[in-house]
Every structure is written in structure tokens, then in C-alpha cells.
Amino acid sequence: MDAPVMSDAPGAPCGLHSECFWMFVMRLVGACTSGSVSGDAHRLSMVLQAALSDVKKAKKTWKKYFDKMLALTMVIDESDFEIDMYIDRGFAPTAFFANLASLWREILSDDGRKNLKAAGVADKRVRGAETWCAALKQKLESGDSDGPKIKFDYAPKTTTSKGKKR
Image: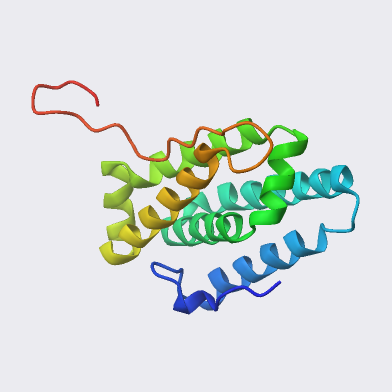
């Protein structure tokens, strides 16, 4: 599987730890493909759930949390064939992507952005993450795979000047 060098990608996590996580998950995703579509999708489901569990454990350190979330999102967005297979075969993709979107809403909320800034994460990297999330949203909601369209509401609701949520 030829993937772009992580440091060349806009908004890519920088640092050995993040790049190692990205490469590790990318390699695991590639190793899920054996020719048995159902078995491959099941293995991929386990890899994605384990990666998301690891991301949640990093929540104590906002920079690491952000970097791992972005790395996982990039892996998913770059793994077209494998993700289509995962969506097509079931294995709770709707719940997984709802969970992923929920974590992004937390990170991209006003409080999350304050925590990221305090942790030294540049605004440019946060905007890059939003670009990756938007690309994943478009992919999931377009219904390109044979499976269902998957809703991916990663952006936090904003409050208007009149106090109403949008």
C-alpha cells in the first residue's frame, strides 16, 4: 500500500510518536486484506476499534490526543478499498464513525481549541485536521461504497449571536 509521507500531508501530525502511530495503524489496515471480504472487514473492524481505544487513552495529553486522532482519520481517509469493505460488510461502522465524529467535536469545540493552543498545537494544524475531517465526511456521506451512507458530523455546533445552536 503506497501512502504519502505523513509530513507531506497538509495538517499532518508532526513528531515521531504520531508518525509511528499512523504507520502502525496503516500497516495493520493493509494486513487485514487476505481475500476473504467478510473476514477482512471483521479484522479491520478490530484494528479500527483498537486504534480508537488507543486514541482515547491519549486524551490526558491534548497534543498527543489531537495527533493520534488526526493520524487515525488520515489512515481511514487514505484506505479507500479497506474502508469500503468495512462499510459494506456491516460490523457496526455507523457506531464507529459516530464515536470518531464525537471525539472530533470535542477537539474542535471552543474548549478543545483552547486546550490545543495551551498544548502548543498550531492553528494551522487544526485547520489541516478540519480539511481531513471534511474529506472523510464527503467520502462517508456520498455513499460511494455498496454499503449505507454514513453520517459523520465532526464539526461542533456553533452558537449564533442570539444564543441559538446551529
